[in-house]
Every structure is written in C-alpha cells, then in structure tokens.
Image (cartoon, rainbow, N blue to C red; front, side, top):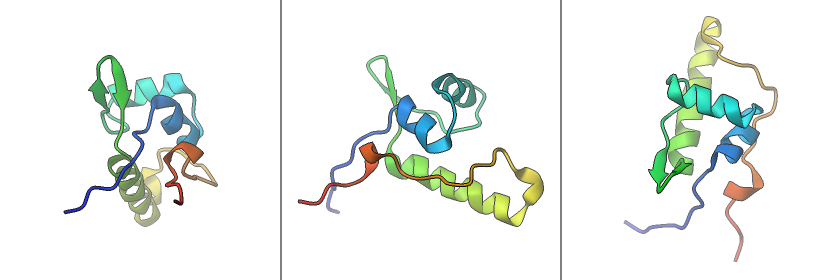
Length: 87
C-alpha cells in the first residue's frame, strides 16, 4: 500500500469548510457532533480522509432523511490547505 502525503486539517480548516466559528468546532467535537481529532502534542488535527469521509456520510444521510439536517451550507469546499499540489 503506497502512502500519499497529506496535510492534517486544523480547527481553522474545519471551521472554514463548515462555515462556522473555531469555537463552534471546539463545541461540536466535545459534544460528538463532529469526529474527535487526534492530538499531536497539545494541538488537535483531523486526517482529511477521516473528516471528509464523515462529512460525506453525514450529508448523504441528510439527503435521504431531511429531518436529520444538522446545518445548512449551500457551498462546502475543501480549503486551500487540504488541496493536493501538482508537482
């Protein structure tokens, strides 16, 4: 299995993708709304595959069950920091 380089997502990245405040990211991870980060030292990070996998699954559930809507954001995009660079 080949490893590809990635940049872990920070709280600021998660906030940008979801269109929420960084403090809301803290609240949502502590109450289980979003996946728990992995801490490296004192800093929380999310693996992009784990976060975007969760987001995709969450949004797909919302499509099939409109009553489960957690938030409404018309455009969710990957922040510049998680896009792979072309070499």
